[in-house]
Amino acid sequence: MQEIVIHMDRKYWEKIAPDYHEEIFDVLRNDKKRVIRSAIDRVASPTKTVIDAGCAIGKWLPVLSPAFKKVIAADISEKNLVIARKKYLHLVNVEYLRADMSGSRLQLPAADVVVCINAVLTDSLKKRNMFFHNLSLCLKKGGHLILVVPSLESWLLTRIIQHRWNIDMKLFDMKLPEKEAAKRYQDILDGNAEIDNVPTKHYLREELELLLNKEGLLIRDHQKIEYEWQTEFVKPPEWLKKPGPWDWMILAKKK
Image (cartoon, rainbow, N blue to C red; front, side, top):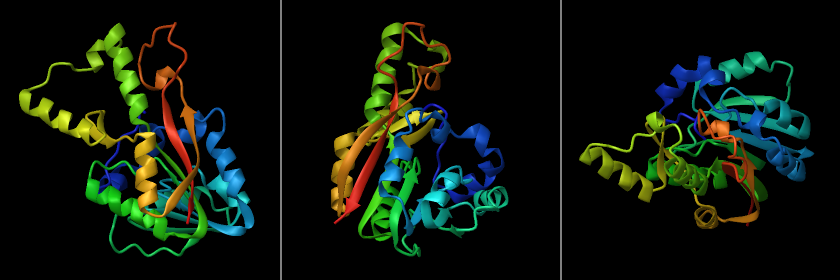
């Protein structure tokens, strides 16, 4: 989505933490059809433990806490965790842990459910591979992963519409220096699409199936989290309604 700004660098997240509400797209508020909540309800239990992997400032903790016995809120930014702790003091079953999900020395207890919402976004293939590997390691056998990621299909649809009907022309630079154009072309081949001039990983649905299967996770359900066109364009045409842009929501089970 247009408002997402992503780096997997810890220093970046420490810096942005105080302004997280203004800087980062709010999936919880914009999931009008409650697709993610429904997926959580399907796998939740008062006897289970859930990990919120990449919890940031904890927007999903009020949803997860009543539905599970224990919630582990894990994030790369200590400042994010401090903000979450202060805001959700009343959620007594939440444990906060600083963890780099793209690191090779991750130490998190295995859980029954892992929720990961728009966190696997780095343009680094090495870090993404480790992130997906760690998501699997954090799950008990038979456990479930609820994963939300930006859709590459949606990004391409947005650019096709923008180019065809000349929407927000000043915001979409079509003329780039040769070196920058070559870099962006290579980025697109890797699924890294520019958002606010930051290469951000977007995923094909079938690509997600391959990535998760490689880590021993089988997709049980996939759905679109649909948004309004105002999330992509400053001035979308009045006639532009459906189909809208979307993220992918994947529900997978560990073999």
